[in-house]
Length: 109
Image 1: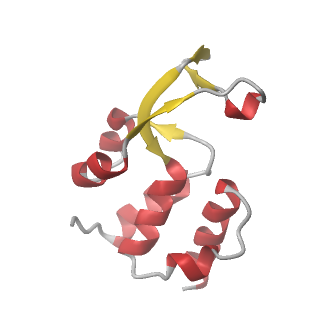
Image 2: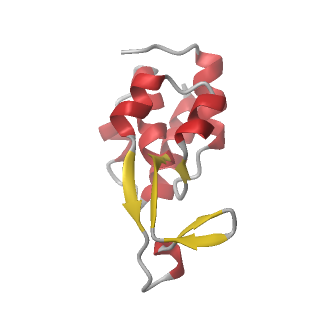
Image 3: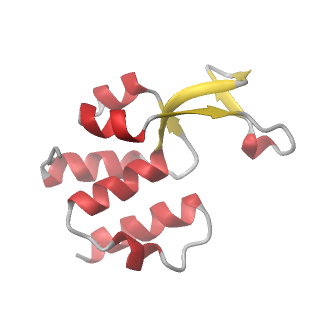
């Protein structure tokens, strides 16, 4: 398991919003360890009932996209910092709220 400096963890966490999928290239450019990307990456499919379910790539709708959800990355960062992710996110409703709870916990730390 790769460990990151607190500075790198905070930089990655700052960019997370909870509603994005990062490409493997974007992850590499941000210093996300390759083993994290390998473990967390998946292929996601767009849903078309609501716009928030639709995946956009360079401003265009795409049916599938391979990458890492930023909410999963935020949870991995928090875990690597020694935070109790389950406790921090127990009352969070939705991915954006999970990221917000993690960020608040890091700031309180």
